[in-house]
Length: 396
Ligand code: SAH
Ligand code: SF4
Image 1 (cartoon, protein in one colour):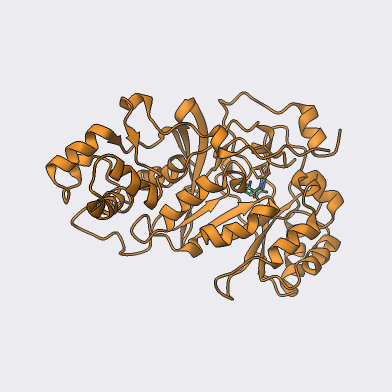
Image 2 (tube, rainbow, N blue to C red):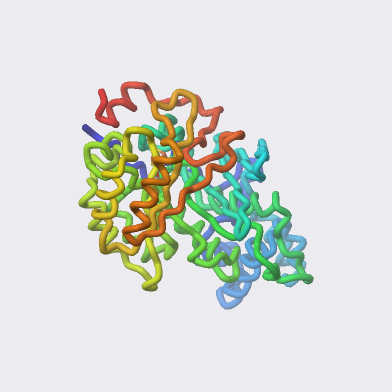
């Protein structure tokens, strides 16, 4: 069986020049270094460019300002130059839905007319934004709605960090320039998880650049411990998550034998459980208290037995881990059912008794199809064929 090769961001990422902005370059999503170089190319003397890029950076990401005219610590002439050559352009929110439980789902339109979903989940002690990294996905996990949609393209860094900024807009959470620093009290948007549409490690560079902005002290300034990247198990890219991004890692584990994991998470046919665990054992951590999150979707009669739970704790022995149990979220045509509550409890108990935290994730936003694995852009018609899905799951 063949798992399709990852498609590189270069092929799929749209050019940065915005046709709607008369060829002006979008500054959003540029790394520190690229922003500096871009300002130098626009004629800023090198000795000034460091300071200027820092100022523009702070306006964009700390204060949420998009109008150059409002960047009052820059000279009028410099602001005019910026206005002439650049834009700060975010993707557009085309639909906003609010669930009975307060979860908010934004449908975000990106260049080319494509759409992705971003979900904000308020909890008592935090507010988590679930961010997408691709339109669709190359992979075909058989329990995931996104997996039924073809990969349309990778998101560019501005489209990824733009989701965080749009959510802050929606929450009205930008500090007011000259008044607050924005650091008083708990933040409404305090955590970011790359658990929306797509496989973040197949769009590594863009995800890295965007998360660097999210974690930058002079940018959006979330602590690295509050940013989690979830992967289905792209083994060769796992170590880079620690060394180049430095955020927390979650792995979609979901099964305790290769036979079952091949069907649920077909990338397992390329890198099996043993190889995945080796990569996780070798995962570089900045501190001893950091744990890897093992995500485990609870599918009735498929992966939820006591035996599975016992196998799971054996497999992960020696890895600083926590196990996040996710009750399956149904979607139209899904071939699985959610495990019963009592089964989930029994499974969680075994994992817990073995010494691992085993929280059960409460499904959020189900009424607006915003729960884990339910995201999919309705407007994207390119569906994987049945043969393609079954073939990749080894069921053809
Ligand atoms: N592509 C990445 C991140 C996006 S999916 C990955 O696979 O890890 C985020 C999490 O939701 C993953 O653990 C995924 O396996 C899980 N998930 C997908 N579909 C689901 C569903 N229908 N019900 C519950 N969880 C699901
Ligand atoms: Fe893609 Fe993740 Fe869904 Fe698998 S679970 S199809 S990797 S988005």
